[in-house]
Image (cartoon, rainbow, N blue to C red; front, side, top):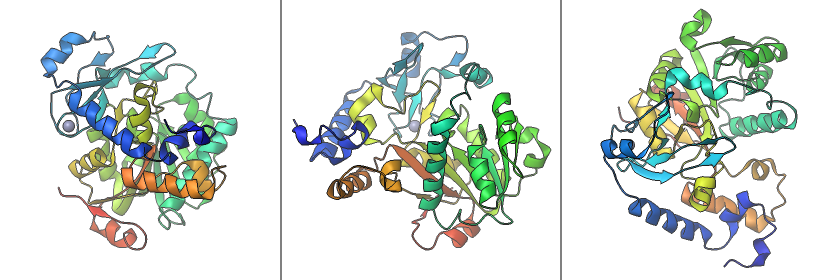
Length: 347
Ligand SMILES: [Zn+2]
């Protein structure tokens, strides 16, 4: 269909550079979402067996209870169902995991792969994301930072290097131990922010969520907490998989964002909803062109790199989404100038 000259381009880039493919994939998606049946939750429940650690949900972003069954991703020893909200387009796993059983997903060996070249790639991704929102993260001196879901401390290490007064929380005891071994000034704690007095006190200038948002079973509650923990003028940084990704539109159930432990999948529209409902004043986005393109290490020839950037921009379809949320008008005033386009959120 597209000819062989694109065969050698990696899958993750091909969708963005083959002529006409963006429009084809968007049209396919449009067709898929209009054709997928819309069901009442009561009918949907009858279709799906419910495990002991699961619950059925209505849309958490808009309250719509009707369901559009979309995908059934699966992998080694797991599978789940993804539905689309017919009102706001939110994609989420349904049935979902009961919050009190979230630990089941992380029972064993979760942090074993957070080292070596994986760690180096992670840290590069963190640096690229901070740079995409420059100058917000350039200088950390006398600024208090909370990394929510701090894992093995890879980001906290970068944050303390940039001068931030950095704190982390995580639910995995092994990860917290590992993080504190890695860190010199920054500290990681086990539990929720409310469990740690030094963190519950709030006053943070920055909160970061690195690949954590898709794992949250109660995002509204968590974001109200984040909003409360932010100091006046504070910002919240999110990196998550993008539910508008052209790669999702191309690969469907085989999309890389449908991982074992992901629960909810946000687009720039549904994340706006989440932020406005939890008291944030504004939001800015930095499109994600892929780490190798941004780091300048891609083998893609220059004209194709340009085409890739254009396809990402036109479709809002990068595979990851990078979001900077502003707590209040003071935050917008402080950081909203320059290259960042801030969208104000209505309450
Ligand atoms: Zn909805």
